[in-house]
Length: 379
Ligand SMILES: *Cc1c(COP(=O)(O)O)cnc(C)c1O
Image 1 (cartoon, rainbow, N blue to C red):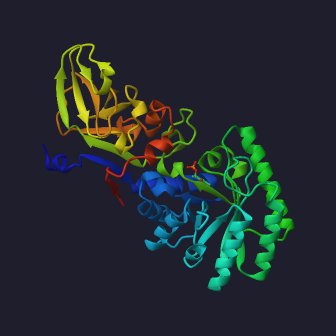
Image 2: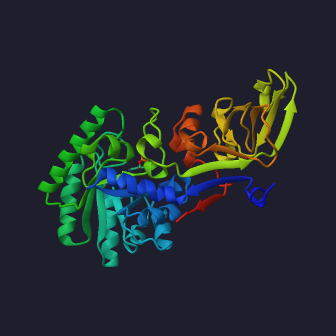
Image 3: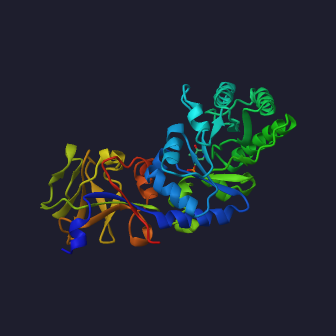
């Protein structure tokens, strides 16, 4: 065994920051002249928010976006000073902490608008807000029936001083091209109402990765790119990262912990949900559902060992699962890739999403805390 082999971690998520920069540049080019907000919520979909945000800013993205204020505060704490928006708030969120750090606030209700204005007034500063119109998802966002009142109040607070409406935004359901177009129309009507009320927002934004790529009319002033930044296709229709010119950022891997030659009829893992049909070799992989490997993918997913695919057999357990490698020569310590760049022979995160009746978003985002993230940076 060579020394590198010996030092490879037992479990590891390798995060390729060059790929982040490539994807950011590639997507920025595709949507120009619209600007790009890199969405780094949920620890950058499990990839490490600070490292990914830095790489995205280096690649020229104009904005960063997160869900929670705490995520935004952490980025500011790491010295990242790009324009930054947070849009999902605790009812008791301390907006003063956002205002003092130049964090823009997504506003989904009149009470959030008033809270932002109060915090700004108390601090003697201006709160930059992006008013969010709900155009169909029925989640956060201002209800269409409340929109005229909220924009009128926002215009009043702009004139009085504590509020600046820097953005207007919404979010698409990705139900169908027609449904998305109807949401876009509803948004543009809302923008008009805001303009009539006297608001002149600098950025109007509605598209996330899927619409940024397939609904050019939705690009407006800016697109909010999450999953595409991580080199994962948003569509779930078989379109690959390579088809989109994107490079997968995360490789989830481990090292074989044990190898066992078993006779025909031997059961494996809990419930003996799988039994060997013939004599074969089982390799034990030290990742399980505690590490985000979905139990639902038991008996359905594949991994790559030395660039060759092998099936996952038996139940995926909390810490480990088994792979049937047949008569392949594998050894304890060999690298097992659960997912990564298909160009290397590995399955994609999308493949695991399919195997788990889920989506690749959930696969990358749920990699557990026990798996160390190793950020690699070729340049
Ligand atoms: C998560 C999120 C995005 C990013 O979506 P992707 O499909 O990952 O590009 C954009 N906007 C909002 C409001 C989000 O919550």
